[in-house]
Image 1 (tube, rainbow, N blue to C red):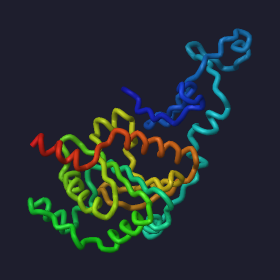
Image 2 (tube, rainbow, N blue to C red; image 1 turned 180 degrees about the vertical axis):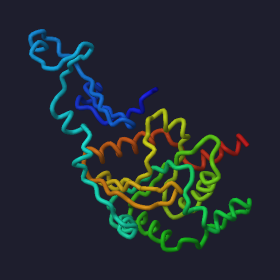
Image 3 (tube, rainbow, N blue to C red; image 1 turned 90 degrees about the horizontal axis):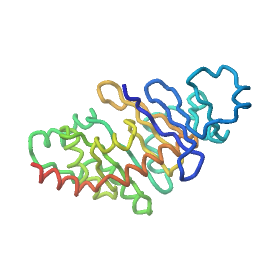
Length: 251
């Protein structure tokens, strides 16, 4: 069985060695670096079994990139506090959307219109939400999303592709990425907002795809990891208009 590995980070600049990876299923940590080769040093190691290879890594590598689940600076916030983050951020708010459906979308009149094949009228909806986005972007702040899409797209993903018209008019930048490309890039399946590259709001969903909680993460190494996810997703994603045009050609 192929491991699902997440690259945590490297302590060596651009050459990528030594580095730390984490197995997302078992929690095991994989560290690679230059081997310890001096015979006298190896002879003094305890519990070195046959087939094991000792390696040498800087202490800073483990401090900066080793898993910190026990000491993770995270707290659960309610949805009202989560909403306030969209007025308190200073520069950027960026989201990765990875789910195939969102239950909250399916109870809206616009979703019903879309499923019936009717043109969705977005004007005048969610006045408070739209006003906030317009206010924040008018201040020079950036609000962006990358939405991961299955092939073929689900009904919910096609609905959000249509919804991007509304988001764009209030100042957001919406981009899309095929799930196969997201998997190739080893992007996580997590849904999250990244604020000012200094805090992460990790969205928690139940088995029925309802948003049930938000975990706020401020631990620096974790925030850097999510920032790396953002950079990779933004580099490979395409504007929603281009993505939608490509779907239309396929149809």
